[in-house]
Length: 269
Image (tube, rainbow, N blue to C red; front, side):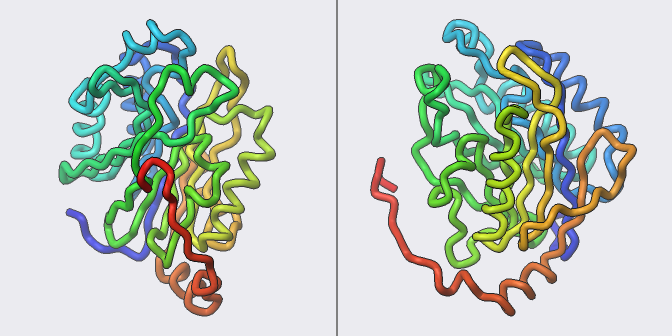
């Protein structure tokens, strides 16, 4: 039931992704769910959580799937079973093009998708994937307005801009290496402060040929303070958010009212 709630419990899973092995990664998520903190509303998974990243166009094409593929179907079942929403990204194919596609899957069956806009040009990502062609959508879930961006999108504040309190929570779904961890943490904090919203950095764990990733999952409140975990023993990084407290802060310190208006004209935005 999609009821309105003040408290929203969000759990990020720093999954140690097994490269190219969807079955193993989906099984790892299912196993982790057995230890999900009670009352969790949203589970945030890392970027490309079923496959990891590939700079080989043929390998990427072989691993890509549609919105009706195994990855989304598996999460549909978990969402129904645990009565929580799932967010993350997967390697998607639409009309012979590959996308780094984010999803928000609700227990009632509603689904929202967003294709990563900013492709990391220092790697081959921009050559393999197609950039998204629309702004991050805002999902209404249990009384909260929720937006999601993907990894490198985080570096672009205009893209992440919360205009006139359009969203209350920003999910950042990432494979961000420790080598740039200082930037990741401070960009998450900046997005929380400037948008006066809660921010969840759902980063992968483990390591691959591109770097180490452990220890970067973060959850911040609307003032940029890291929130305490609700369950230290779980494989998740989980925290409780309060919409009442956030709205009170936005009302008593309405910095958003003084924000600049702008329009994105590139690619029809």
